[in-house]
Every structure is written in C-alpha cells, then in structure tokens.
Length: 85
Image 1 (cartoon, rainbow, N blue to C red):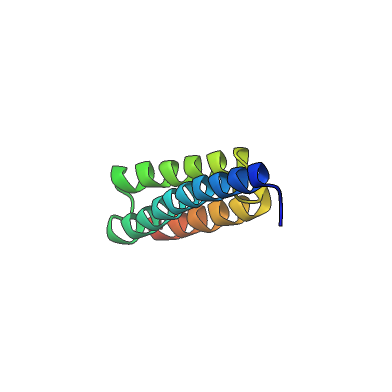
Image 2 (image 1 turned 120 degrees about the horizontal axis):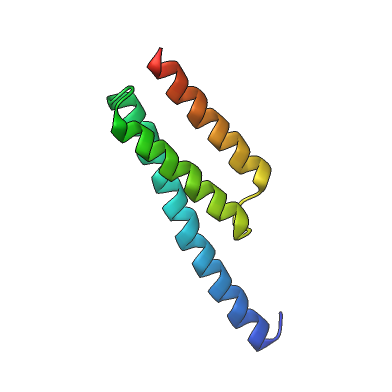
C-alpha cells in the first residue's frame, strides 16, 4: 500500500484522467455519428476536428498513448473520407 499522500494523488489523477478520457470518447462518438448522418456537411468537419483535437490533448496530458490516438484519428479520417466519395 502506498503512502497516504501518494494514494491521494493517485486517486486525484485517476479521477481527472477518467473525466478527460470520457470527454475524448464522447467527441469520437459524436464525430462518428455526424459523419454517418451528414456525409460532407460542415457539422461533420467540425466534429472531426473536435475529436482530433481532443485526442491530441489526451496524448499531451499522458492519458492515452500516442499510437492509440494516431490509430483512432486515422480510422476517423478514413471513415470521413469514405463517406465523402
């Protein structure tokens, strides 16, 4: 069992990471849904940019691995590009 101070900081960090991870997942889900509904509209472009931005921020904060973020961005972009054609 870690020291009390370490345990408190670990819990705080885990709580903040969970909040931001949930926020990022929500952005990805919204982007995916808008791409399906509105193929090449302005809304789908905005939601895609928002999701990519959230993924980049999560990487910067160390919440997800950079390769995982790159994979998710690639899949979203591929999904968007295939729906445009």
